[in-house]
Image (cartoon, rainbow, N blue to C red; front, side, top):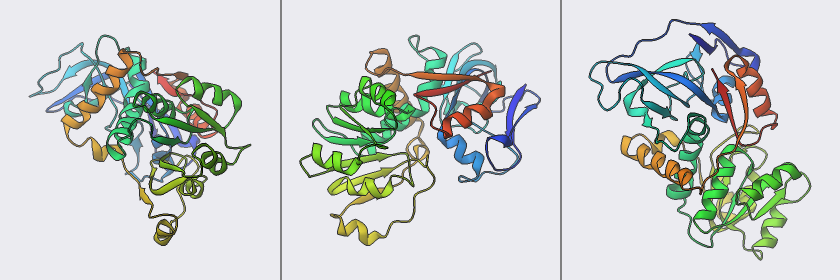
Length: 323
C-alpha cells in the first residue's frame, strides 16, 4: 500500500511516498481501507518536530473508510462497515491503516466518508472547547481566531446554535464573507483592523469571557487584551508558531485571567467521552445545523502540497487527501 512517511523533521519536503506491506490487524483491531483522510494543523506540528514522535513515522490522525479485515476478539464491527477515526493512531496518510476498535466510530447513513474525514477531529475539538472547557451560554460573547478555518467555521456555527454572539478574525474579505455565512456575527480583518479595539467597541469596553485561539504566537498578547476580567484564553493551536511564555503576574494584572492549553486526546481517553462528542457532531450535521465546508482536496501523493497550502493560509475550511 502507499503510505506517506517522515524520516526526519522539517518542512513539507520531508514527506515521502513509500510502498509498504499492507498491515494485518491484531487483537481488538481492524484494518480500515481509507476513502478520505483529514489534514490538520497538528500534522504539521508533528512533521516539523514541535510535537516530537519517534522517527521514522507515519503521519495523520484522521480518516474515514471501510473495514476490510478484522482481528481476533473484535466485537461490534464487521467487514464492510463504514467507520471513521479522529484521534489516531498516527499513520492515517496511507491507503489503509490498522486501528484499535476503541478509536473508531461507526458512520451513520446521513454522513458520507468525505464529510466524516473533514469533520470528526475538528468537530470533536469544537465540542470539547465549547461544551467542556468553557460551556458557552446564550448571549455570551466569544472570540474565535481563524474563523474561516476548519475548526473556526465549526466553532462559529456551533456557537450560534448555543446562542452566543460570535466575533471572528479572518485574513481577507473573502474569508470574512465565508465566516459570516457560517455564523460569525462580526468578522474582523486582522490585517486591516485592531482586533482589540473592535472587540472592546463591540462589547462596550468589557471584552469577551472566552477567546478560542488556534493561531498561537501572533495572537497570544492581543487575545489576553480582549478578555474581560476573569476571562479564559483557550490556546489550542500554533498556526503561527508556539506562543511566547506568559508571565503569570500578567494574568493577575489584566483582571485575574485564566489561561489553558488543552488537548483533544485528554478529553477522549474514555470511549464513552469520544462517542458522546462524535455523536453530537454527527447529529448537528444531519440536522443541518453544522455545514462542513470541504474547501480543497489533494491526492494522497500530494500530501506535501497540502501542507504547503495549509501553512501558507491558502486554504478555507477542511482539507482532505484522497487515496
